[in-house]
Image 1 (cartoon, rainbow, N blue to C red):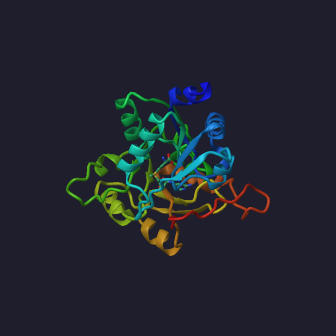
Image 2: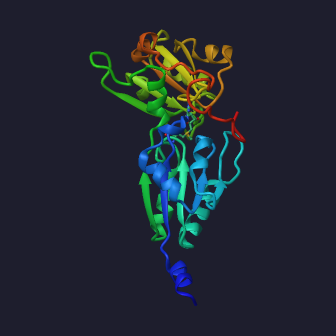
Image 3: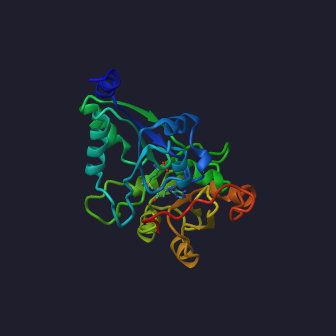
Length: 274
Ligand SMILES: C[S@@+](CC[C@H](N)C(=O)[O-])C[C@H]1O[C@@H](n2cnc3c(N)ncnc32)[C@H](O)[C@@H]1O
């Protein structure tokens, strides 16, 4: 057997869980981009900037494993299994995930499987939409003299389901509440927060396609949140921010999406996105 083949056979594989950032392609980290350029296999999700895929080597194997809100190309178990198999086969695999890989991205499950299989991995954090979304809407999640804490919560769980583990009554007390995946259940979430004593006039904002050229911000109140999201036909992906810091948007809304004219490459609609 030729020496090169032996090397190939014994080469140790490794997985890199890379955060692709919140949407705008150049918000990936320097390390994430470097690893993407070197990868032999790229397994990528739906909510990643599609332009980033062009950064991979032409010979890299590109595997779309996207999960839509209502449609899965692959189930999580299959994705995890495939990742383990590729690394076991000696491949350098970049697992590219939207935002930060460990913020509601099921990245923890994937690294657990790699760890249990005794395989090498590295986690490359990314800029989460939970922080970048508010920032691109001119909303600091903390602000001296106004707010000293914030929470990030998924709104994916139906608050009325008996198995819901989200303590909305406790979250109602948090000064700045950032909600991901909350669009579908927003009316129910509003109800829970109001019932727990959060004021109806609490400033609120819904940010759609944050950091991209399709970004839209609806500035409203907790009371009017579901109606205003519906009235503006605000598309997903969407982040909702609640709290006094939202009033800063009125002064700090610095980002003006320009339709791609003078800015960056627009974020393309990808298969399965809404
Ligand atoms: C499965 S979670 C993954 C979050 C991701 N790991 C992160 O750190 O941003 C997907 C949700 O993130 C939010 N999201 C991601 N990218 C977004 C963007 N560019 N604009 C608004 N919301 C976004 C939406 O709430 C979406 O439903």
